[in-house]
Image (cartoon, rainbow, N blue to C red):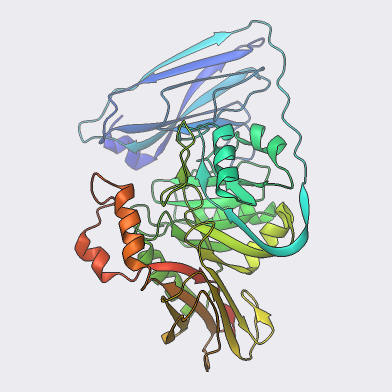
Length: 458
């Protein structure tokens, strides 16, 4: 493979023939893997076609694996077990990084026709927990069905440990972890269907679909095709972490949500926040969600500032169910906070909640942030700020917002404590290219509300 091959297309299909009676396929790929040479790996059966394919996709492991198997009775995590139709199959190679001198890729395919029972997918229940209220969850995490080390069972334990009510598992370009999560979803912890559409030029989460979505965005208009596919099937699309190191560089499609906060706040999330604010001011009705992008380790780790649900998205729901979560997240009925036990930040305009459209007196209920600062923002930028006097406060600022009103909670009294906890989590030095000078310049947000709309800016 050479850079010229990648310039023609970042995805290469390598065909191989599978005869009738085959019950298992084993594939091994060998190449000089390094920081400058990374080849993603996937597979498709004879039904697979041109973008956007709707059937025949049989799995993806990106650069996390160099071998996989799939058969009638089971498959490597990330790959789809089931019938092995005869015909021309394809190895899908994603040419993520190819060095200037090129790289030799060796592929070994083994076929077996031994007797194997057919694997049956788990039934997907629709659990619900009665009762209106505030529910907490995380919209972005991974298992070893993509590039994390941890199993679905370990991620499940981490979600219980964090005290979450819902969790979207969004493995890269595959939905096979649902073999576990569909059956594990319960009124105690509802699992949402998710997948992270992962490309070299941006990532986006898909929510609420059974189907896999083709991620092979190569042309300028392909992001719009992905959005149309998601919406035609009744799902939601969220653009992820539009900031260093993985900004969104495709065309901006019709999207339902934006992941404004990913990882702990100091992971350059002020860049995402500035871009979200600009899009809101330009007239986009674009609710915000948060996601930890937690890649579950092989073992369960104790709670801390760099674990699952940092940040946490908090939604007001009429009940806990997947349908209720999808409706509330699309409407923006909630806020993002630093952790499952993070500060509460509830904004209203008159009787209008976050995500609604209305007018009236602004009221902001804050809990767990004594001595910190609240800032209020509309389409023109920051329009007011106030100090929080106690552990629970209701602020009623006199405001006339233009376009929308939203609020941010900024650490002041809590800043040094939070920075100390952050540094303790990274004893080897600051991560993500941060410097102490950059940290000193940045307000440390602890929570963000969704907007309440006052007029149409378009």
